[in-house]
Length: 83
Image (cartoon, rainbow, N blue to C red):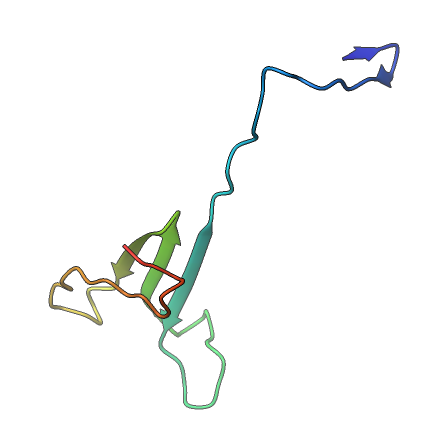
């Protein structure tokens, strides 16, 4: 609530918990020269993988990967369960 530039906050007893956290992670794979960092002027993106709230997705560059990639599950550690 604001009044003449003064903001006041008050607790809302009707709200018990805030929203849960959302998690997003990504990894971009690309071509590059040996022992060099990728260069956007000539190196190509080959794959982008990302996860959003425990659901994973894979985007592939068909110039690099011509066959379909079958669905798979990846669980690096038991405490990091994948879908």
